[in-house]
Image (cartoon, rainbow over all chains, first blue to last red; front, side):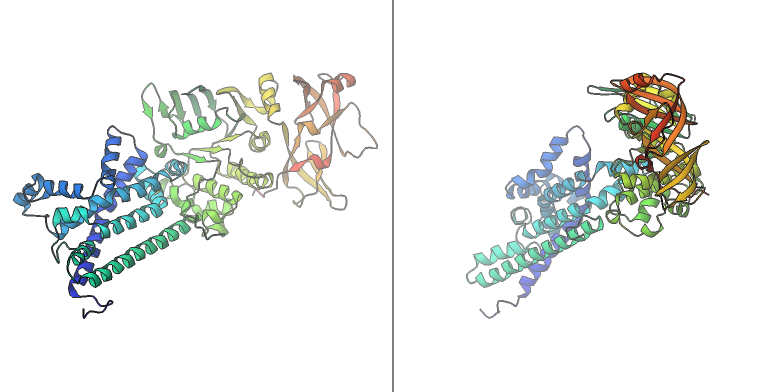
Length: 239
Length: 361
């Protein structure tokens, strides 16, 4: 064991960067659909609402390997959608980092929707009515009143999604495998090292790293949330 | 001209409001739960009536027969709510300009600078709502609604969440708004003094029905109206002119018609218009002027009307303006006061409450 506990090898750095890349794209990808679905569930009643509700939250309660397997069936090279994508656009997502993004997006989506939905439904409806009576049409009311006021909760949702994506293991390994430099994110790398003789110290380094990133994400989220709350005069630290 | 004929059924509660409004300010008066806020919400378009129609200046905002239900943002009806409902993430300036910026240039009849000056908001523009006092919040809410240049302004108990002192501070701004901007208003309250300070035109709402509309002092002869008004606390609002200051003796002298009225000492300038209130049950009647009494105000008048409400008698006395006096049945009997009797209305200077003066140029 020549590498010290603090210095990372190139493969370890690759796993770290890949994880951050996948988590960042995942967060970006679910941001707008997450807010849209959250708004739908918080504000509207429509036929099939409880079905949508259940479908969105399903990945939370399923073993992650199940969504991963379903994605493989759907988007894999032999899957219905996968085949069509391959033939029409020449795109294959199975066993690529984009596939890893999709896998973690599916797993992180419910967390995002949960936070955003709660935040949106907690915005005082009378403020929205006031905005309407001032001449704002519904979309403007949403963009200028609902969204800014729900922002703390939405930010929390995004950070949760980011962290969930960093930790995604089951769906990812099932759907896109464990390919070094392509789909081997931090958790997969840790798992791989634990399977190797003498891989413990590398596994420990990456585990500590994971904790640090997760901690940093939570702290950033806390800071953003506090800033957003202060903006609307609800901060704990105001007079 | 506003033509209201709106019906709304909500569980056991049925609102059935019919009236036409021509006055610049209509006071909508009634006890809690009468349906005042529901009626306003329907006029603003925030609540859909079950049936009926609503016509403002010839335009149908709602008509169940023709399936018209204009969205709130298309009605040009401004609302000031009981809780100011300022947008907490925006500062005062952005709150004020929220609706203003949504108007086409040619529809921006009122300028922000004008409203800021009218409502004295200049020093608050960069503050956030949570930094404002209750009274300041309501002034901003009023300004925000005015800046949408509404053709009708609804005020839904805008002062109900404020204490008496703050109320008295806001009312002059409402009066100023009424006098200077000439936007038709419906002012909802269960405090008769607030309403009478702004207008004498009222509509009485009770248990979902408008039971009377017209001038308050004409309506008050109606037993139903009187019972309701009395239960909510009868206040007389008198509009007076300041004549003399007597700081050493702790009072100011005002005139009301041809009579003199002593009021608590005020700092207002000689000649200014002052509105004061006196509760009906703080006034006593006498058949002759009484000497050697600490009560300074003894206003001569003629009994116009006597109504019994429960065990109380409500006597309307014409002292140049109509004054409502609440006494017991026995005292009326003892004094042999009846319609047409000449009486003196006695009340202590200190039982008079002042609305602060504002300078109206």
